[in-house]
Length: 246
Image (cartoon, helix red, strand yellow):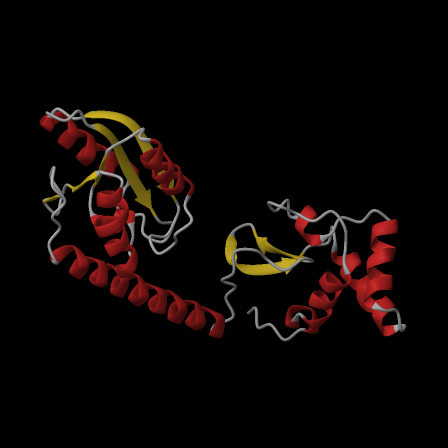
């Protein structure tokens, strides 16, 4: 009898934090199934806050590397949509990548088990199509909701533009960030006086003023101001009072 080294894959997107799909719920379902069948779990892979339509996910990439290395030879998920919501990727995983690497795949709640011989029925592809339709439909609804909120003057983006900040008690409204507002005013004053974007950027760098990405402590922040950053600010409608923030 083949000895299985199990990897359980758990995923939850930021947009769909429903209780029955929580990381804890997925962990309970997959581990209980493995224990019941006598399969040994050697590793857990968790992508918390990642969409199922994305290919690049840290834990998923790690799991694929472990499969190639032979660290695991069985993958257990709560359902296929945890693995991917892309219909083409569904087929690639179940019909190409897993069988090519001699990996047994199990979706607990959908009663799918590739078994020792890799025989996956057409229902997996149908689920892949349904999952992709679901994510497309959700994306449309999110976009429509954001547009409706914008029309009523609500701010819906993740970050406020440099020079603004979200109100503490209302994340859908923004106010002037007085800590850096003078930098915006200086940029416009210099531009009105005929300074080029490169000259404005040089001035800010000489005076050791943090650029937007460093000020907001974003990942992979650039160290210096650039002409492109200056141009982005000059073209941004927020600074031209074209934003309705009732």
